[in-house]
Structure formats: C-alpha cells, structure tokens
Amino acid sequence: MDKVNTGFIFALAALVLWGFWGFLPKLTVGYIGPKSALVWEVVGSILVGVVVLVMLGFKPETHPRGVLLGILTGIFALLGALAFLYAVRKSNVSVIVALTALYPVVVILLSYFILHENITIKQGVGMVFALIALVLFSG
Image (cartoon, rainbow, N blue to C red; front, side, top):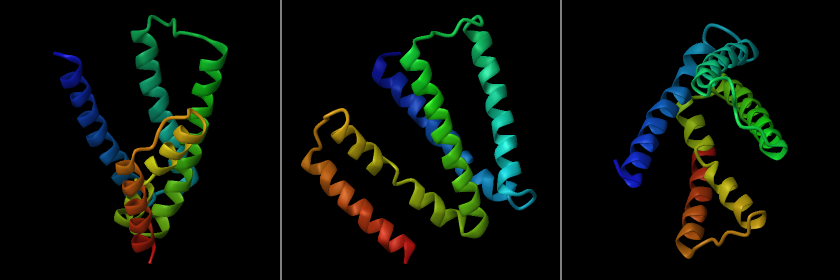
C-alpha cells in the first residue's frame, strides 16, 4: 500500500476507535465514578502499552526531550480524560463529544504560535465556524 492509503486506513481506524472512546465513558460512569473510571482506563492503556513494548522487543527509543514530551502527552491526555469523564457524567454525551471534538482549534493555535506554522484563510474560516458551533452547542 502506498503512504496515502496506509495513512487513510490508520486515520479511519483512529476515527472508529476514538468514536468508541467517546461513547463508552458514558456507560462507564453510569456504574462507577469518574476517578475510578480513569483508573480502569489507565489499566487498559497499560495493557496496550505492554503489547507495544513487546512489539519493540522491550527496547523503546529514548531521547530526553522525546521521553519528557511523551510523558507530558500522557499527563495532558489523562487529565483531559478525567475532565471528559466528569463532563459526560453530568451532561449528554453527544453534546460533550461535539464540544471536545473542537480541540483542533487549540492544536492549530499552538502550531501557529509555537511551531510558526501558517494558518490558511480556509483554516481561519473553519476555526471561526468551530467557535460559532461551540457557542451554539453550549447554549
């Protein structure tokens, strides 16, 4: 498979997997609290991590900045997941998922200010529409 098709397949896999990730917490917090749900999410993450570690022959790449950024990514992901769990416990999962799905606006702004990537007119218009959607969803 060429790079475009492989990337597309992985993107579709991420879409479906994240769809379940966005939906299952609503069921989970119906039985246990958000903090306990997060603990069990971490257990699931560890299971995936162990499988990947085995695939790497127990020799993951190491670089001080890469390791630090990877750890920070995990911290932000889990704190976001905890906030998400509290949100879906208190509100409709369809609204919460739609609101949190606007995270690319944050990514685009960080990419612009930190990585100095350009924002096209099309992306700018998309961000404006996303912010309008945020207002409409929250109202």
